[in-house]
Structure formats: C-alpha cells, structure tokens
Length: 164
Image (cartoon, rainbow, N blue to C red; front, side, top):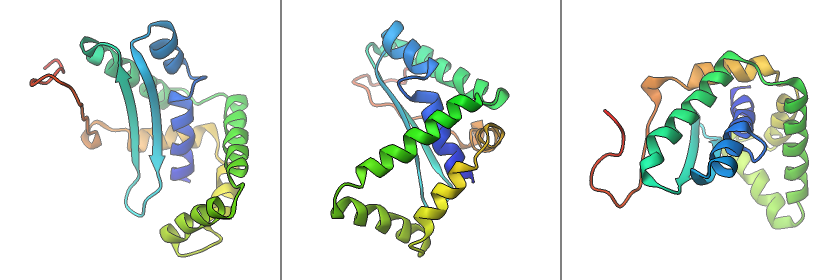
C-alpha cells in the first residue's frame, strides 16, 4: 500500500492543480518547475521533490513552503473527491500510454523486474484503487521524517545557500 499511497502523495503535493504548485510556480513565480515522483524499487522507497528556482536567493523560502505542504499532508487527510480524481487520472493516463507494443512491454517488464510476477501490474492498480486519504497521511508520516531527508542542490555558487 505504501508505494501507491506515496505515488498519490506526489500528485497531491506538486501536480499543476496543487496549492503548492499554484503558489510557487504560477502566483509567486519563485519556481520555473516543481515536480515530485515516487520510484518503485525493491529497497525502501525513494521519493523525490524537484524545484527549479528563478532566483537562487529564494531557495530557503521554497524549501520552507515544500516543508509546510508536507506537514499539512501529515496533519490533514486529502479530500476524497480529489483523491478519486487523482486515481482516475493516474489510471487513464497509464492506459493511454499503452498505445504500442514497446510501451506495453516496458511497463510490464518494469513490474516483473520489481516483483518477478507479471500480475504485479494488475495487483498494483487493484491496491491503488483501495487507497484511502488516511493511508496517504500515514505513509507521509512514516516516510517523510527529518532523519531520512537528503537535500541536494545544484548551483553556480560555491557555498551552501541554506541558512544554518
């Protein structure tokens, strides 16, 4: 359940409809791009949030806004209607991408690589359909903890832009 819950958390946090995206990219124009992803791996899950800043001096502010959005997701379960919309979008965008033999083979091969079972793809979508807002909140609380956080920056500056 955790991989599916974190995958939905990714959409909730940084999709173009998310409050965080609207604030940082559209309204305040602090970021050129904001996205996140959850990678399915055999090891514990790697969740990535990437922000491309307009101005380097906004790094601490953007990080604080991302942290606030994560904390809100830990406290307040997502709206059921929004979750249903995300589930539908994920399901149908995946299905629409299966438009040629290569795409089908690659998707199936990925799930076989992870589990050794060709039915894993179907199992994932069956599990994902049953995810609740509370399960997303639980997964975010479980995995988004300070001691497992890694922050990487790419900048032309020689010094760390983070406030100490």
